[in-house]
Length: 186
Image (cartoon, rainbow, N blue to C red; front, side):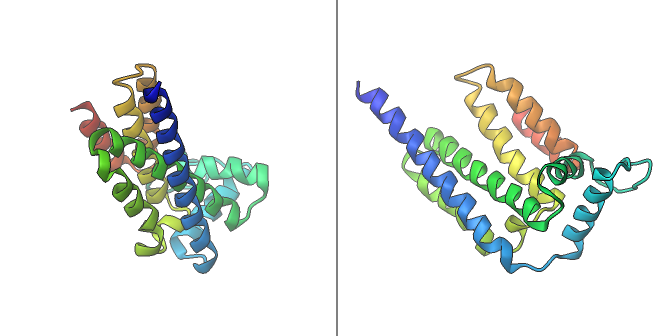
């Protein structure tokens, strides 16, 4: 009985840390003017949303996933910088919850410290965790891939999710995806 209660409480902990992460990222999003790097990502996504194609009409050195995902969001919510930054806030919240859940399995009592460090990252590493940039998206997806990989030891179907997330990291930022795949395979 207490095991069930404890598992439920830890789920609430991950939800609370995830909410704190999303709010931390969202709170800083309005403070940063549109940087050149983020502006380029937004411009490419606008062009894709209007019907152009990556690598045929638009040449860029990075993978297509962040641009294609943002183009989909622009089609759904309009091409606003806050639609893009909203996704970063959601990803940061999911990553904070994933870090807490992963750390509590491996570090126990240190899990809140690990989650707190990630929740503080938008302020400490401003503006990296509050703007839409392919590296930011890849890092957040990498944290989710790590969580899914660790959890797949208990729930094997999560291995497929880990594989999809590693693939998304690789087609967001190739070098990070290759390192993540090697690290998780070990």
